[in-house]
Length: 180
Image 1 (cartoon, rainbow, N blue to C red):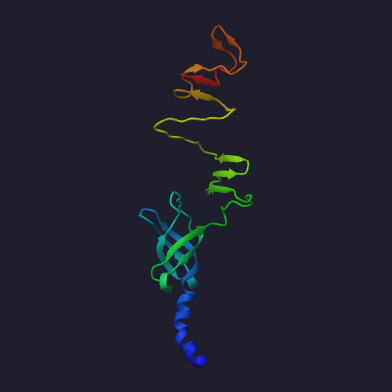
Image 2 (tube, rainbow, N blue to C red; image 1 turned 60 degrees about the vertical axis):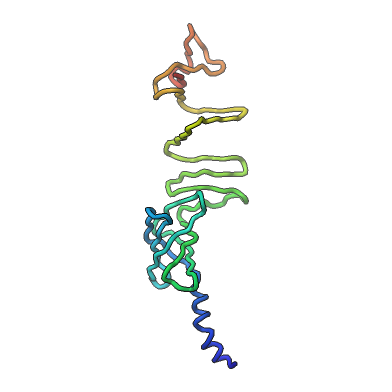
C-alpha cells in the first residue's frame, strides 16, 4: 500500500484519536444533578457540556475560569466527560512529598502534613455528632474563652490547674471557662 493511500485511509482514525482528550476552561457548573454538569470552552471557543466525574467522598464546585481535562469516548466531542478540574489561583503550593490538603478559595484548609493535622479557617468550626465526641491526647490546650454546657456566658466557672479558688468560686478564670 502506498503512503498516500495509507494516510487517506488512516486519517479519519488519527483525527478521532487526537480528539479524545482536551484541555478545557470551565464556564458554568450545575451542581443540582446526580453528577455535576459542566459547561466549558474547548478548542477555538468550542462550547462543550458534559458530566464531571469526581472521586467518591470528595466534591467541589469550581469557579468559572478553572481548568480541566475532558475525555471524549470514541473521539466524539458531543458528550464530553470532565475528569479533572483545578484552579491555578487557589491551589496550595509547596506541600512536602506525601502531604495532602483540602482547600477552598477563602483560604480555609485541612492539611494532613508530616507534622500532624492542621485546620485553618477565619470562620467557625462546628462538629455535629449524634453519638458522642471524644478527644484522646496526652495534653489538650484550649486558648480563648471556654464554655462547657450551654450558651456563652451561662454555666459555672471551671478551675484550671493552679487557679485560685476563694469560698468555692474560681477567681482567675471566672469569665474564661464555664460549665453548666
